[in-house]
Image (tube, rainbow, N blue to C red; front, side):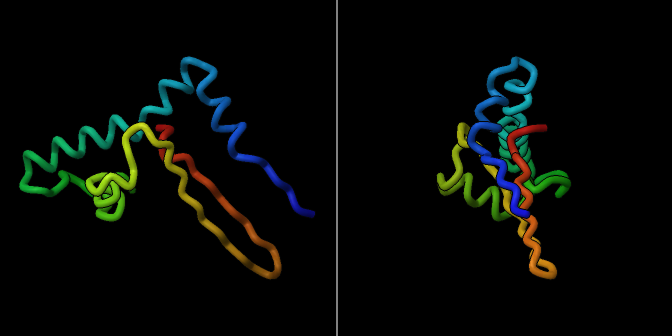
Length: 94
């Protein structure tokens, strides 16, 4: 049995309630904090405790591939015994 849960309507719904809309700014807030840390610490974050402190993410931010106002999803795909599981965590929710 294949279950399909369209992600677009789910993400749009998160902006409808004030609490979840506020949470949707998590990645933006963290990114701004990390950029400040990098400027104060010779380009090094104080800790590598989140995907947001990772070099690939920060490089994409610096080159403009990801903008602060973008929504970011990460896809994790697992294929085991003819069953595919896809997980799409929303990086914008804290």
